[in-house]
Each structure stands twice: as C-alpha cells, then as structure tokens.
Amino acid sequence: MSGPTVWKTPAEVRAWVRSVQQRGQRIALVPTMGFLHDGHLSLMREGARRADVVVASIFVNPMQFGPKEDLSSYPRDTEGDLARCASAGVVGVYMPEPSTMYPPGFQTAVLVEQVSQGLDGEKRPGHFRGVATVVAKLLALFRPDVALFGEKDYQQLQVIARLNADLELGAQIVGMPTIREPDGLAMSSRNSYLGPDERRRALGLSRGLFAAQALAAKGEADVARLVAVIRAELAAVQAREDYVEICDARSLVKLTQLEKGSPARVLVAAFMGTTRLIDNVALTLG
Ligand code: PAF
Image (tube, rainbow, N blue to C red; front, side):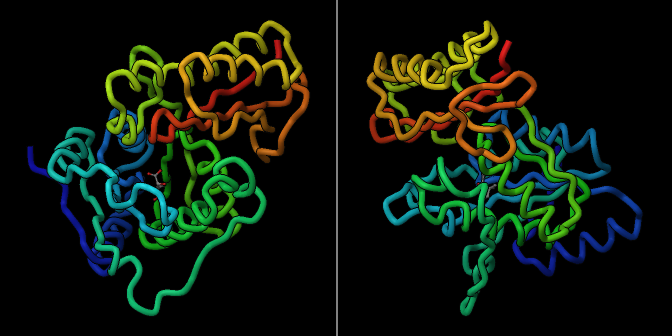
C-alpha cells in the first residue's frame, strides 16, 4: 500500500488544495496530534464517506499545552501513524514543524469567549486558545468541506463549531461518537501513560458516567444526585477528581436539574496517578 503524501509547509498544502478544488472534489480534514488509535481512524473513515478525498494533520500543538503539562512526553509514532492513515484511505498528511506553524513574529490568537470557559477551559488555562488558534489555521489552510472531531473532547468540539461559524470558515463540523475499548474506557492517546493497575482503575470514569446515564434515563433529574453517583465510582478506584459537571449540551452552561427534551451532557476529568483522563456522555431524562 502506498502511503499518504506528507506535506511540511503551507505552500505545499495550498498547491494541493487548489488542484483538488479545480477538479471539483470535496475535502474532508481530520486534525490530530498523532499517536493515532481507532477513534481517529473512525473520523477518517467517516471523512471518506462524506467527501471525495480525506486528509489529516499530525501536529503536537505547543500552544495548547500548559507549562506543567505533557508536551515533551506526548507519545509519538510517525511511521505507525502514516500506516494507519493509509489504511483509512487518507491521501495526504500535513506534518509541519512548530516553527512552520508558529514562525518568528507570530502573534495572533483565536479566543472563543463563552464556551471555552469552565471545565477544561478553567482547569487548563490557555488550552482552548491554543486549540482554537491551530484549528482556525488548519481550516483556513485546507478550506475543507467537512472537518471531523471526536466527541471524547466534547468541549473542544463545541469550541471548534463556534469558531468555524463565527469566522465563517465554511466547513461542516462533524462530531463523531467516542470510540471505547471493549471494557468501556474511552480511547485516548494518553491511555498509553497508564500502568496496568491504573488502566484497570481508569474504568471508574466510564462506569460512573454510564451509571449516571442509566439513572437519568430512569427519571432522576437531580444533578447533585447524578454527580454523587459518579464521585462514588471515582472514589472507589482512587481517581482524583478534577471536575464532574452536568451541562447544557450546546452552551455548556452548568445545570442543577435535567429537563425533558433539553439535551444535557455529563463531563468528567480525573487523575489516575499522574495521568489526566477525560470522558463524557449524553444524558436524556426518561
Ligand atoms: O484533539 C486534538 O487532537 C487536538 O486538540 C487538535 C484538535 C488536533 C488541535 O491540536
């Protein structure tokens, strides 16, 4: 199988985009930070269904990491990633150097005001400024018809949908369901940090979320009671909570009560040892 074309500069990407547009073909873009797993591949395969050509970016974006976060240890596997991209039908991968993405003198940032606040926006100051800036750059460069992101990073998905609409970048932003390991753990490149015991205990996150989801489906509308169920599961596996919150599914405004017909989302972030994991599910009041 021949691998995807690797682009290192915006000029190479622009030339390719022009040629594809001249052929009247639709482009799907899957932005990633690499160390690809089945969650990323599901985005690429869906991109192939929705467009004529699928491309990806692999860029560990320094701008979205805090000073004490895992930028230097973030897992990387370029060769494996390119093989996985090829297996999912990706025709080209943009892999710029940080100095290409952010050349000397770079001083522009994209700030999505409301939906970036709270949750990861509060716990990881500057994170969504970095995400929004790099994704805006990628959407402006590729001008994709469709761009696909996982619901695992649910707040990120809302931030990107907002910036795409506000900056009139013209992509259809598609959020795809979280892909889980057979035992329920949400797939994440950061799962590779977990030791065997932490990996087993990490199931407390999804167990708590599914328990809350089932209770809501049975008619429990009280947010405090739903949150307590999740906290009990986190405590049982000695996970250190960063947040457990139930929010309106679009605005991410915090709720105290679920309402029939109003989509809600429960989001959790917790440390398993030194590894920070996030997960979320939809809540529907039954
Ligand atoms: O979800 C990710 O992998 C990153 O946050 C993204 C969207 C590629 C931006 O760097």
